[in-house]
Length: 174
Image 1 (spheres, rainbow, N blue to C red):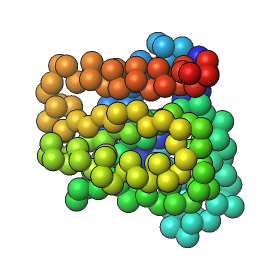
Image 2: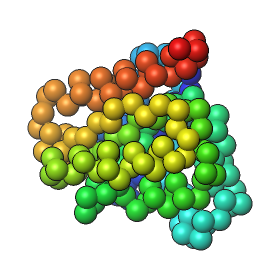
Image 3: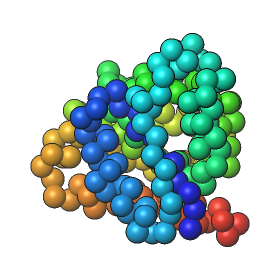
Image 4: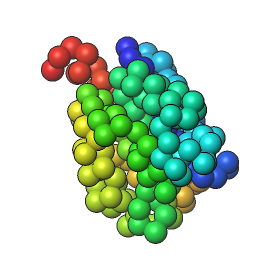
């Protein structure tokens, strides 16, 4: 169906964001016929990220994976009412139009339901400025929901379904 780059921008190795992506989003996209590629921003070299050096080989590979993708999932924890600094430095090192023509699903996790506003008020303007063709309605889940709510996988699968529909529409020229 298409290639989806799944980006996890959590600085933590044992992240609820990472678990949500791996547990429900990636399998759902595979079930819908997409090839998924995983990118953990925390595994990229810190010095080139912080220096915004796009010539670093690892960052060039990440940019190439993004360029090759039909759609992108951006998973981030929310800290202090905004998406992670790790996601910010990653987006900053990419070309201005890196999301041009792409469907993007923002997915965030956080402790307070109020942190869900970070998707629309902090992340959405950045994604639009980078040329995203279609930013599908994002998905925000609290840490408590991720740990206790049996409906959480369904919520994540529905978010993946929205991305699937956007990628499919782009392929058929809708």
